[in-house]
Length: 239
Image 1 (cartoon, rainbow, N blue to C red):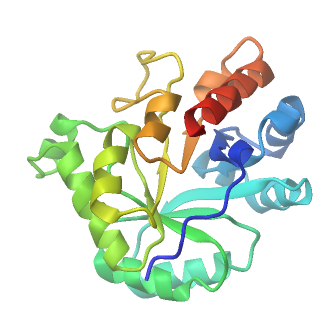
Image 2 (cartoon, rainbow, N blue to C red):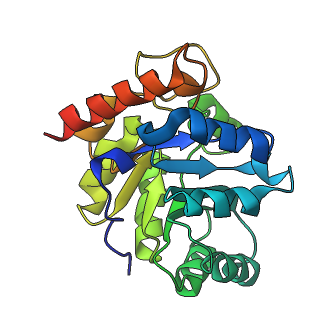
């Protein structure tokens, strides 16, 4: 059975994507953002540095929440073994792919901590044409909702999905299922590789529990001010 959504303070509903090449750059960003960000997502680029778990420990030592976004996908036994080991670390969210019910069931059973597992549905960089090229000739929203329901049935705690699909996911899964939305663009689409994007207020109005923001903060003239502006927008959306 899926567990209740992770208890989050309002300021923890903004997750900054710490997409940097190494520990030095990662901690420099944590210092730069200060108290404007309380939750960090660490992904594949940082893993390749060999300093991934040093950064994870450093974030935990600074009382920051950690989202491990490595999108695990393998045979059930292997994926479950990874989740069992990962559950020993101070991790709040971790991603697995939501394509294989047996793998999801094994991962859910192996999670022995308060870590919430999120199933990847359809990457926000993908549209209908991308899915059709993979032999799936349906709209992204149809595939996303189908995979969200499969994840819920397998005991996974939630999904990571575009804000464009947050409302139909919430309608299908109910209030006790976590929805985390990446690809958030506070000022609207900016012509990058994210195809299915929404703004901050829309994501929360449609049922998101938290949002992931990277480039709109990282590329801002004043990143800390950009993060604080998003925090203000989140608080307004939650009233």
